[in-house]
Length: 363
Image (tube, rainbow, N blue to C red; front, side, top):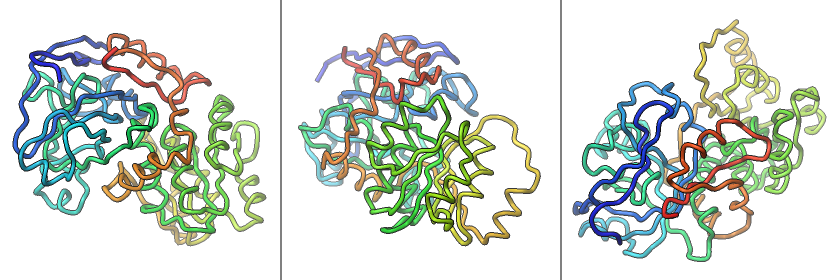
């Protein structure tokens, strides 16, 4: 463990990173300090980077998809977490106050009082509240999940992606063995959802995307998708109907946030089926009433989903530790902490050969 000061990549203003140094904090009795191995850029990070996310007060340290090693624990934390110094862990999303109703129900990411990453200036103690730094300070209440030593960092840091996929499919979507599932979008969340559906024994997994996603289609099939559909070259509704012998999908997980994809999801799903909405859209949306009408006429179950709950993260960590899926292949590009601006620019270009970008913070 480094003594004295350590580095973070601070987002000083929209589109502007700078390397800053802060004193490595001492942990409180309920808290944990991680030495970060790798942190990846999430699909939800670019809106924060560009200044589109509301309520951000700069400077901040971003990053929540990471793997790290415990270097210090408070006295109570050792009992609460049943972990020890030296363990490799993946944090389970964002923490909250731990006492309000949503936190007590296990939905800390919805807490209005959360103090993590872009909710807190990095100039405030304990400074290290995001994964794009050499250390991450874990306040009591955030769940941690052990990752085996033999697991590559490139796979371990994707605990949130896999945990999200389990949450969207198995928990929020109720996918069960024998179901037909459509995953709309083949970014990190969509590919994680392919894993979640495959893990529970879905009968058919159909992934949809655009022509630019041809590289991601190949990876989706490698993870377990039975079919992929290019919505720019094929009629996706007719393809889904054909692949399911006219029965349509039991569950649709929409991860893109594209307004057109939202309407397509209505046509993928069978009557009384389930749609899980994951993707965010930062443009002004208007509705012609079609979405509401179809929900009523098909008696659909439509759920929003933001981040994983603890059981989903636990299953996600088990999947990663099992090595049943080539999860490390999500990471197609890697950068150092000093190159984080380049990393975000590459990720935001949405190049066909780029799925996830990892930042190796100690290089």
